[in-house]
Length: 125
Image (cartoon, rainbow, N blue to C red; front, side):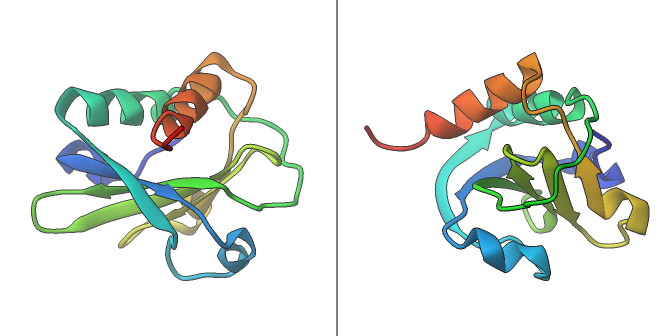
């Protein structure tokens, strides 16, 4: 997956559990509950997994369950909502080219399965 150019400035990542997936079809930003904050190596590993997500054929439902907010110490750099059912991702960020805003990923790839595992591990038992 193609990450925004600002990804190198990321200092921490908020993991977001999306509570209203239908809202994200035409929304201006990512909404949901922050369930974890990943810093340092954990944040870099997560962004590396996202960057390693291979493309896929889109399916069309786009009902995302998870997202991330990449932040520097002072700014929200970008946000991504992931739908592991339709293999779609929506990215928000300043000056983000239109062709980068909607992307697809193979939700069955090793990188996607590991990312989903990490997301799920943020929830209490």
